[in-house]
Length: 140
Image (cartoon, rainbow, N blue to C red):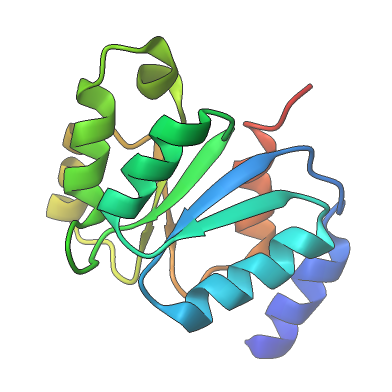
């Protein structure tokens, strides 16, 4: 399985013109995603919880997509997405938010949609899947 994922990353068209905010409390997950995003030429910034993500989004408003972990201390991804979607600025309504989750149960899919998330990626992530989903939101 690991060999297959390694092959998938090499098949991916590497250039992504995109600014990504990665929100995950796990440092290893952030490092792995950062390594892959750098390889693709994407710009990445990081937050360790939902509150930090909200603060960065309000300050910069230059992200094309958010990769948001569901379970984090201080504020989880579902709650943070709800706060982001409740803001009046259209940037926050239109910003694509992709859930990062270790498991996908049918009730979680409903929670992700209800919170206002656009999509999800299972962890550990497959680079080809991540690239395909991010490429939908890159700058043209």
